[in-house]
Image: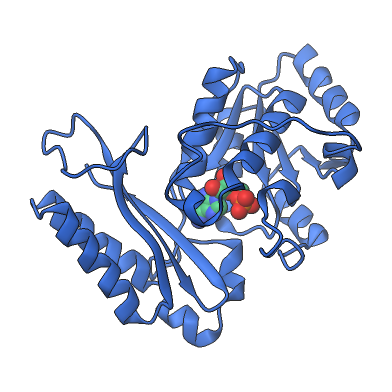
Length: 283
Ligand code: AMP
């Protein structure tokens, strides 16, 4: 596996592959890699002849009071994992390569960048959209792979690629979980041993809620009960539990039993220093 740090070197490598008619898959990450990220890499490897993974902790998606400084950074370990998975090239730019002096453009995807996670992180999705648009344009892969775990983010990225006519397939990959149901996340490292024991309660409450909703329970009661169960399990607070249209993320007050309008249950809750998110298909 080669590591490159400049957009020019990335483009040169991709251009060489293109001359050989090789397809290219892109897996953007912020590092702190775990099996969830590696699931994306495996999908890219299965679909494409060449795989590029990116490692960049994007400052524009962190608010000043968030965990940018503490975010896990272990490039050598991440590189070893990517190499073992057969990744061809790791793009690990410095901040100044992505955001040189004078950088001013923001990519914004209303209305998907509002509500849900944006209520507590108002600048987050513009930061994500801007860096992902840059990475897609820098690499111009055939396909780029993103986790369903960050469901609102996935919808923002699908929309920006469509709206900007980027010639890239956006592929969503199912959430990889621990055996007890907890979605893998770099931020799970913030959990104490006790909190780690409590954490799967988020997923468990959501599974029960999906069962209730598909069984015909009225959403307002089912969502309120889900919130209660998460708090009763030991979470400190719940940012949201929401039933939304799976594509537009508009709130739904009913589940379409025929499945004509797919719905998604999304939740975010705080446990110690970690804000955990999860989501499940409802229909
Ligand atoms: P991050 O490094 O946290 O920004 O995540 C990079 C990519 O990995 C994003 O597309 C995430 O959605 C995806 N990802 C993170 N955790 C998981 C997981 N547990 N299952 C599947 N994909 C994931």
